[in-house]
Length: 264
Image (tube, rainbow, N blue to C red; front, top):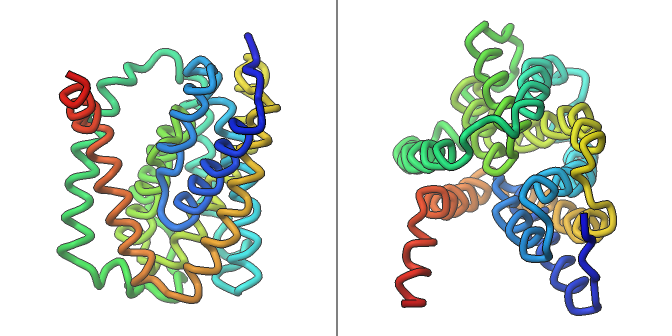
């Protein structure tokens, strides 16, 4: 693999993109829609960009979840059990990353994003106010299956997994959007730690570019976590709507279609 040479301009661009990706990932998800294209723009093959992106996800996630915990949004002990199904799914997803039709999957995700957008618009109270504020119930088999499926997708490509985790935690488990956001980051951190060696073993991580990107994303995650807590679930919901809409346009190929029209 040829490592792109980073000059001052590219380092600055990578830091800014990392900040934006870390900020969006912490507030809603799909920050990889910024970081993955940038990594490929810098010359990394798609599979190496996918692996390298995990460094940013891990390090920015650690900052975000530490900040949320410091602000007493959630505790590790009460929420670790929900991470287990997603870890199992993520391992399988990472191992199967090269054998799944990525283009077909992105189109399906685009349709799901459109559906989710209208769900967030139609039932705002479900996202802002917890339906199960104490979270003392035992998670059902289908909730574990849902987390397994989301973990599988996260292990495969990561892009957009935060949005699906938020939907599962809010609509499926009854968390409010703020607590679900913090728990979402914890889940992603845990399974990323487990699957990162898979990408490392297959030489699909560029540590030089990955660490520069991660540096920007860690600052973005810290700033976003402070915004999320001080402004509350309502603010996070508006960010989530914007991210879902953008992701749907990207996944369905609408953005690329209009870019081609402009070039023509």
